[in-house]
Length: 439
Image 1 (cartoon, helix red, strand yellow):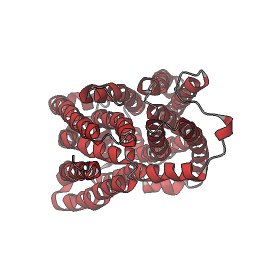
Image 2 (cartoon, rainbow, N blue to C red; image 1 turned 90 degrees about the horizontal axis):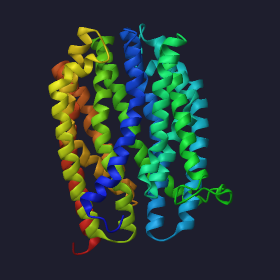
Image 3 (tube, helix red, strand yellow; image 1 turned 90 degrees about the vertical axis):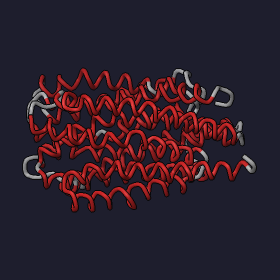
Image 4 (cartoon, rainbow, N blue to C red; image 1 turned 60 degrees about the vertical axis):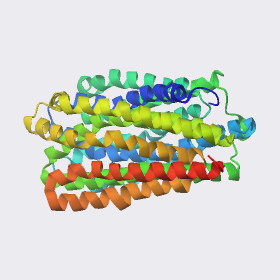
C-alpha cells in the first residue's frame, strides 16, 4: 500500500479482483449459456431485460461496500483501527437491512417493474419469473458483493474473491440441475444464481469468523455511529449512482432496441454480457487502485498517488486494447456460443464490434472516479457519473438512434467514453496537483 513499486502494486491489487470479477460475470454468462441451450430466444431476451434489476442490486451493494471499504482504507492509513472495525461492522448491518427493504419493495411493485424494463408479449412472463426470484434473493446477492468489498478495503484482495469463486462454482453446477433436471427453465437459472450468491456470502463471512482477516466485526459495534453511517453514504451514494444511472441507460437502450424486434434485444444482451468480461478488467484495476489511493491520501503521499495513477492508466489501456482485438476478430464465433439463431448471431456480432471501442478509454474514467471516492471526494465522483450518463450517454442514445437508427444506437457509448476519458483524467490530475502544493 505504501512502498511497492507503482506498476507492481496496481497489478498485485488489481489482478485478484479482476479474477474475482471474471468469476462474478460468469453468473450471468452461465445463465445465458444454459438458457441458450434451450434454443428459446425469448427467454434469452428476458434474461437481458431483467438484468437492470441485478444492476440495481449491485448498485446498492456498491453504495455500502464502496463507502465502507473506502473509509476502512483511510482509517487504517491514519492508524485508527477502532474506527476501521466499527465501519466494517456497520457495513455488514447496513447490507442486510437494505437487502430486506429492497426485496419487499420490489416484490410489491413487480408488475410495473417488469413493464418498465421493456418486456413485451413474448417476454413478459419470462421476465417476471426471473425478476421475482432475483428479488427474493436480494440479501444474498448484496452480501456476496458487499462483503468482498469490505475485505478489499483492508487490502485483503485475495481473500475478497474467495466467496465469488465458490459461489460461481455452485452456480455452474446448479444451473443445469434446475433448468433441465427439474424443468424450471428460466426460473431455474434465477434460483441457481441466488443459491450461488448465498454460498459466496457464507464463505466470505467465514473468513471473518475464522479470524483470517486483518479486521473483524464485533457485537459492540452493532449499533451504528451516526458519523460513520453518514461517511459511508457520503462516499457510497455517488458510487451507487454510477451503477444506477448505468441501469437507467440500459433500460433506455433496451426500450429503444425493442423497436427493432425482441430478437435484437437478445442479440444485444449476449454482446453486452460478453463485453462485461472486458469491462471487469478495467473495473478490477480501478477497484484495486482505490484502496492504494485511499491509504496514500490518508498518509498525504501525493507523489505516490500520481505515480499509481500513471501506472494504472498504462496497464489498463494496454490490456483492454488486446481484449478489443479478440472481440473484433472472433465476434461471430463468440456470439454463436450462446445461440443457434443466425439473425441473433449477425446482430450480436455487429453490436459487439461497435461497443468494443469503449475499452481503451473507459478504464481511465473508472479509475478517476474510484480515486475521487478513495480521497473522500464523492461529489467529484458523482459529477463524473452525472456527466457520463445523463449529460452525454442517454441524450446521445436518443439523438443518434433518431438520426442513424440502430447504427447510431450502438455507437453512442463509444462516443461518450472518448469524451469522458479526457474530462475525468484532467480533473483528477489537476485536483491531486493542487492539493500537493508544489507537485
